[in-house]
Length: 155
Image (cartoon, rainbow, N blue to C red; front, side, top):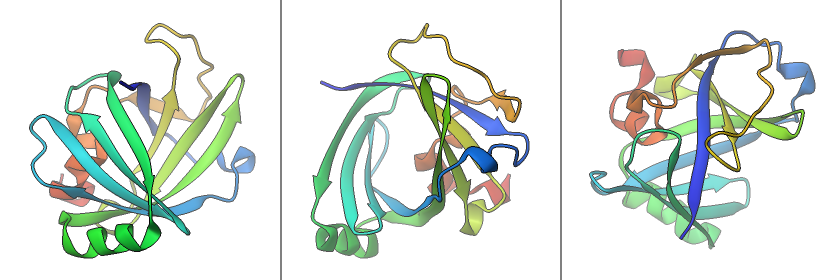
């Protein structure tokens, strides 16, 4: 069993960009209902993954991820996903002992920029860069699975 410990924050400004890598465009979609878990397919360049996350709110939840053939992912995204696809570019920004993932959303979620950090334990310390805004870890509206059904532009 995999456990993900992740904290999620809004981003105040673009001060993170000078430290970021070149970014990776991603497309992802969700399959079926999400009452107990979200089932996601993600494509980034020539690789793809199937991901299952528990539907629990907060910073800690079950997570399983498996690489799948790219052709399968393209077909699943086109034919089996419900709602709109999430389109975003993910940038990695090393700060201290951690790497922040900054997601810059496009499409119906354009304008939304979220920073995520994965931790070894819920109590783990981490540096909070000046560009970090409000924590939204417990707010389900910011989960990608929810942004498919209720895009940021509609709030």
